[in-house]
Length: 316
Ligand code: GLU
Image (cartoon, protein in one colour):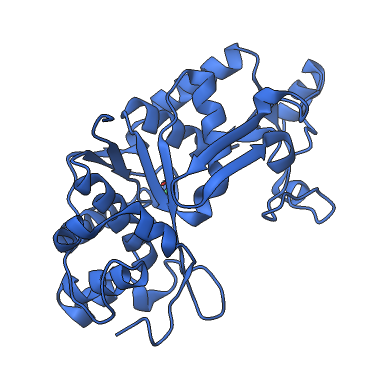
């Protein structure tokens, strides 16, 4: 028997939670509660635009209202900048980083090579700048900081892992992303670094989150190896999509929890709708998270891992 797992909710308070965020939180909660583990709440307000304590409070109130409780935290990433700066400094001392002066337009140019998921692959433009070139550029522009990834032929840069829902994955960092950002040009630490350091320091052993973040695992595992941190189990869960095939976001206000709380008045229909979409409840059944604990299994989620289209049949 392994140890009881430690999971986390890691919401970004850039707006009210929407149905997609709730589905990830529900599955993370069920996995941990059905295995007798513990959950951490971490508010991912790294970005100054997301540093809204009022929104964070609403988020916590929404989780509690839904019946999704946690055991540790809240931790706020906005209070942890020192920890991240120290981590970036360590990598820099080890000769693993360099300053990057490329503009957004340069990075996203149509001529730039792109990975299978459409994101750009950094070509190492700033990797070999001389100290004089760095000084000249730094006089006019604040640099971002990138982490050097091994060349494609070096086995250290090939990352393999098994996602509990989507199965085995292998990624060659040099081909999928290239040297990646660990600190932005405004001095704010990049998501990949903050999340890796936090999951490591908080002892998280199970990461459950939306399918859109599956492509971040290889970078996070590579960082874990550099810092000697353990790799958690990863489980990515289906996304909610609009009928037009777009991922639902905080802009889809009908599915924002503020609107849904008013419309339904009770968590039963909301949890029921999401649970039935992943095979944990009957269509039309009202349930609370607690009721689903004995029904939960990863096999059921695996069997329902296709993204979920939110159409009129989905919304009761
Ligand atoms: N903060 C991210 C979000 O709200 C999740 C990051 C993660 O789970 O690794 O989408």
